[in-house]
Image (cartoon, rainbow, N blue to C red):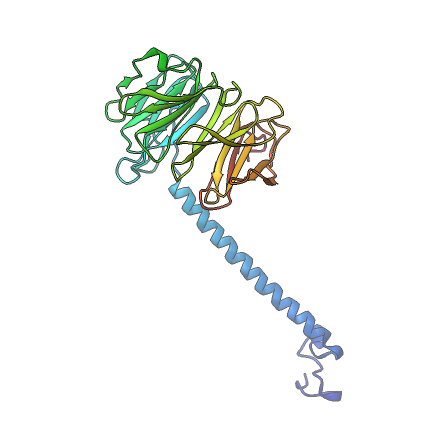
Length: 324
């Protein structure tokens, strides 16, 4: 009825419906409303595309996800074989004293290809050397188990005086496969010769006698950092075994205290298992000055802290009631 140019002042009168009269109404109100409708339609299309992308990502994750069954108790530790092309193995330990060997070469639910049982549970730490030849296992026994990764025969250091005087809590290799370091409930940090399985050095009372809970090496082979139940992280010179500085409050005994280098080792991230100290504390590695706190969501027990080496990203694994 009528044309687009008909009516007074050249404004459009209607295009068949009363509601359409707003399109040409004075002050451009109808134009705004029409634009909002258009933007709403575009927004809806964008949301639909985002939902499709999310569904595609979820489908991809579900296709690549692999499940591994075989532990009958809580898993306490895990480490990957360095050969990610052919061997594709990882090793995990649990509180019942089992060490399982899994292959992730194929998809689907996987069972262990090898299971090792220890008489002194729990398995506190597993560590594969950088060449992939040996698996080191620490338990509540004072002797480190050394398994070859071909036949899984076990051996240990021959000299009884070389061993820890308590449980072995953590074992780590640096970039040098000839030496590894262990920390125990006896407060000792012990350096070992990989070839002879003998102690080459040790730091007594590294954390004032408190239990050692974490060890991490720097990439330049010059430093390493330890965490202890004294609530502190301590930075050490690997060449002479001297402490350089410490990080953290150290105001009370904690169950676990984690320390990690991050962001090209410019920063030190530390985290306590104390439920009242929920933040990841970030320090300047060179000066020891505290930079900030990163708030950690959740209220469960902290199991792990790990950091991306070249990014300021910290990943914390906790036991949370809400599944996070």
